[in-house]
Length: 334
Image 1 (cartoon, rainbow, N blue to C red):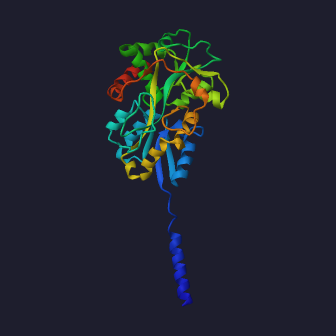
Image 2 (tube, one colour):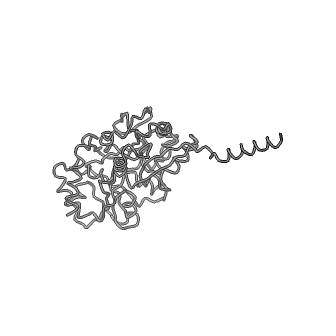
Image 3 (tube, rainbow, N blue to C red):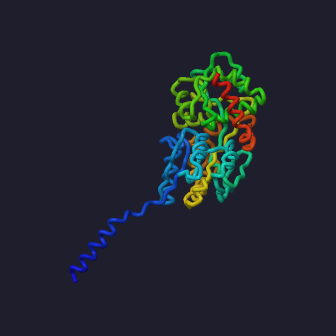
C-alpha cells in the first residue's frame, strides 16, 4: 500500500512539474519611441497599470506617430497590437477608414481638450501646440511669426521632422498649409534653405537641438517646461507666432484584434484617469487630456499661449495628406 501511495505521489509530482505556471495576462501596446524612453511616461504607466491589473504590459515602439499607422496598416488584421497609442487628431479619419480599429466603449466624461472631443473609436490622452523652440544663448531674437521664419535671411538653421513618419513633421506641414494655403509650396522653397536636417522622429531632431547642432527645432509650446522643471534653466523658449499655432491631440485606440483582450478596454479606461494622466505633464511634457490628482506645476501657466488655434478637420487631412506631402517632397528633394 505504501509503495502504491508513494508511486502515485511521485507520478502526481511529475505531472505538476511538467505544467508551467500560469502566465500573466498580457497587453501589447504599439507606441512611439519617446513614450517608452526611460525619461518618458512609458515606464511609470507600465508600473501603475500592471499593479492595478496584475498583468504584463508590453510596449512596442517605432520612431513616431505616423510610422505607427504605417506599421499597423502593413500588419493588417494580423497585428500583434491590442492598442495603438500615439496617433493624433490629424490621423484619426485615415486610421478609422482602415477598418483595423474598434469602438472603445469608454466613458469620455473626464476628457477635456481644446474644442472638445467626441469619438467612438479614439480616446485622447494628451494635447499640445506645435512650436519652434529656440536656444536663447544662440539666438537673441527669434522669428515672431511663421512668415518671419520663412522670410528670414540671417542664415538661421532649424531641425524639423519628416511628415511621412512623424506627427510633429505632419503638424508643421499642416501648419504651413493653414497659413499659406495655395502658396505653401513657395513657402517651403524659402523654408528649405533654413532646414539643416529632416529627422524621422521628434527625438532625433530635439537631440540635435540640445546638443547645439541647431539653434531652433520644431517641437511644442510645452517643451520649455521640461528644461525649467527638470533642469532648472530658462535657456530654452518657444517662439510665439502671430498667425497662431497648430493643435495636436494625441489618441489611443483598440485594434480589432485587441477587442478579444479584455485588458484593452481596461487600459483605455485607466488612461483617462490619474494613474495615467499624472505622468503626462512632466514625462511626455504635454497637457493632460484627462483627470489628474493634483494641479499642474505653475511653470505650465507661463508657457506660450497661442493667439489662435489652427487645425484642419481629420477628414480634410485624410483627403489631402498625400497631395500635401507630395508637394513638400517635391520641394525638399530638389
